Amino acid sequence: MAKPATAKSTQIPADIKKLSFEAALESLEEIVEQLEGGDVSLEESIDIYSRGTHLKAHCEQKLHAAREKVDRIVTDGGGEVSTEPADLD
Image 1 (spheres, rainbow, N blue to C red):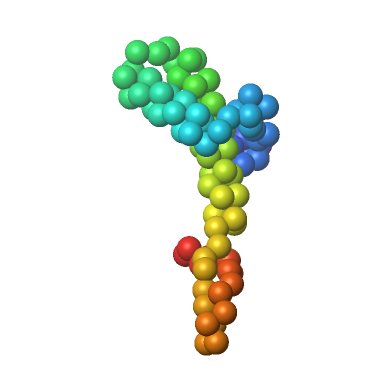
Image 2: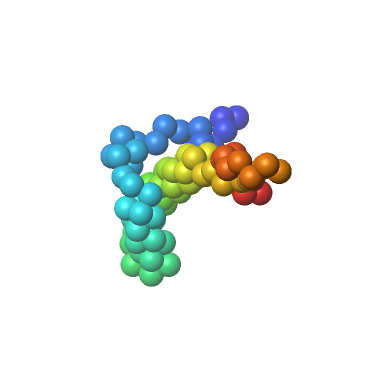
């Protein structure tokens, strides 16, 4: 039996990859509103839900990339200032 496709196992469409985090999040919020409103057909619901999973994965990738760039400023015992990767967990 074949595994169902998930956002992680499916390539994110090029149009979504081009979106900023904010634009992708806004699109995802619009999809949630449409689905919660219940004013779309079953087929359209499936299509926009699928797009929503891609948008969610894209947002997660953007957040992960941003998190890797965050450094914190530290001082050593001698007063020297430097940076090190932030431990955000």
